[in-house]
Length: 260
Image (cartoon, rainbow, N blue to C red; front, side, top):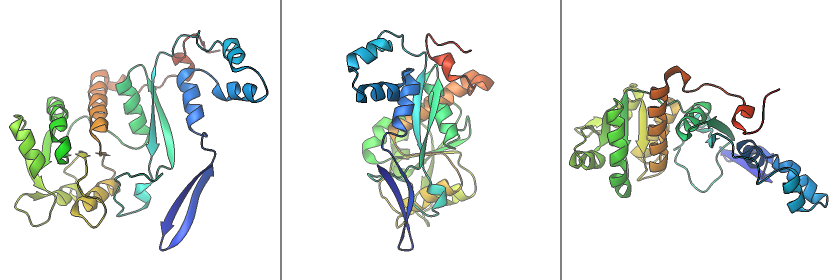
């Protein structure tokens, strides 16, 4: 069983209890077009796995004509002031599934479903730790090509400057001569934030501005892989226009299955 807890004012609350495979198995079944719970049930009743798979055509069916992205839903908005950086704890309270013929649009649909609305233009913050500075350069360059104006904290600003990418320098700390990042968030200047953390928790300025971004509903991405996927999704949405988030039935994606 999977148990999710929340602790507030020294009191422990149970958010939910469910079978560990309750979300994974339906996702994999929809993504592959194979009813895996039915396969498992027949095997538990004594059937040979080889016979069941052959009978259901597993291995002979063509692959679905789609990409499927599973994205977690986090409850950070319900806990004001909490730093949204992830750790080993199980913090998600749900998951969504985004499907499309391309990975980029599948990711975009999953993002929208988790209320991570990716902007198609505006101001983007780029602030990453030292190991990620070389890897953020192509992401920042793509954002510029997509029409975003970049803001960057001091170290990241230097790395981008060396790569020939212009950005407006901002500071994580109050009282610095550069613009204070928390003020930019609270005044609605930024539309997208990419940050791989250096410090964790609300005791740090960095944790406080991440919490502020979450409270305002700003899209905040904390990994380089996530940043690459988000940039690809933004480019795909701009390219496809109004059809980018078009809805299709699951049966339309599964090869060999026709709608009634």
